[in-house]
Image (tube, rainbow, N blue to C red; front, side, top):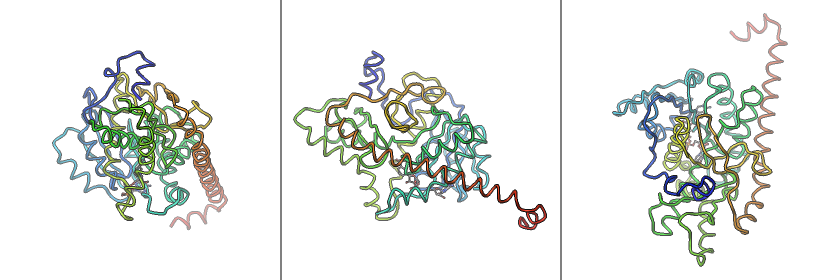
Amino acid sequence: MLGHVARLSKLPLNYLQNRGGIWTGRGERNYKVTVVGAEGGIGQPLSLLLKQNPLIEQLALHDVIEAKGVAADLSHICTPAEVSHFRSEELLEALQDAHVVVVAAGLPRKPGMSRDELMAANASVALTVACAVSIACPEALLAFITNPINAIVPMAAEFLKAKGVFDPNRLFGITTLDVVRSKTFIGKFMSIDPDLVDIPVIGGHAGITILPLLSQCYPKFPEAEVEELQRLRQRIQEAGTEVVEAKAGKGSATLSMAYAGAHFVNALLRGLDDEEDVLECAYVASNVAELPFLATPMLLGPNGIKQNLGLPSMNEEEKAAFEEMLPELRDSIQLGIRSAQTAMKDIQQEDNASEQIPTNKRASQSE
Ligand SMILES: NC(=O)c1ccc[n+]([C@@H]2O[C@H](COP(=O)([O-])OP(=O)(O)OC[C@H]3O[C@@H](n4cnc5c(N)ncnc54)[C@H](O)[C@@H]3O)[C@@H](O)[C@H]2O)c1
């Protein structure tokens, strides 16, 4: 991925490379980050990592289950970020003045669960958060962890559009875990520090829609090992299932996702801080290919996406894999848009119905 940017910007690779753990910002602390779903398996370790971020001044925790205990616990850690917590009905207050909203709310995938079943379970999260963001902090950067990312992000975009506040540069599906896993598995395979590996991961965030571009990997693989690379790609694509099965019904990836989420939030904050060459892959609204949402490498800046770097170079085999996954990704995008439209129609009908109830009946109904 960095090789791609270096070629674009004519900068030496190691000028761009960002290593050494999660925190690499300049350390000017003045941002508010809200974690929605802070009590959960991802939400708790994510909040723990964010409490240590030198760029964060206020860390607001929200969940439908009260996050009071998590907030009290985190607030004893000797870092300056102020931790606050908000009850279920206090989402608007939690979001007030937030610069970044990261959404780790929703059901994790269970073994055998289909994408549509997961979508049915988590669509209300996208609806609730997008509506609240449109009221409380429409200029915040909104980053979803909630699965299925491929459908949830288009769904949230549709709500934000309906509310008249959609900015394609400010809405993200976090796919960083795919990059983190790629770096780890490739680093192990090559017997090098995984943090030295750079690789763009494009497409989406489920199965074959996750496309790590091994031909663009830095450092480069020897030609002879191409078949091994294909096996590696399959492992990266199925890594989520590896964790779901290992946890045997007790959830999906939480700790590695918290690491990936904290890394991505830090990148968003570094972009807000106007740091140069903040480069990440994420699933965003896009016009670089035929689909309206796609994960690609991008530069982040003070307004979210500074520049979508588009599709990196691909070899013939990767081009074929890219073409092969497009129908699945298209279906997920359509599922997200359809779900949003149905939900908005239902809300409209409920509003109309309540307007038609005579005032005296409405009063007695609300008692
Ligand atoms: N993007 C990725 O790479 C990735 C990786 C792993 C998991 N996930 C997804 O992240 C989500 C969370 O996973 P988890 O393992 O932490 O689940 P979890 O069940 O442990 O935690 C979810 C939390 O969300 C809260 N919640 C539910 N609805 C809410 C709402 N409307 N508002 C506020 N809080 C709400 C719950 O009370 C719970 O505390 C799942 O959808 C999972 O599939 C994404």
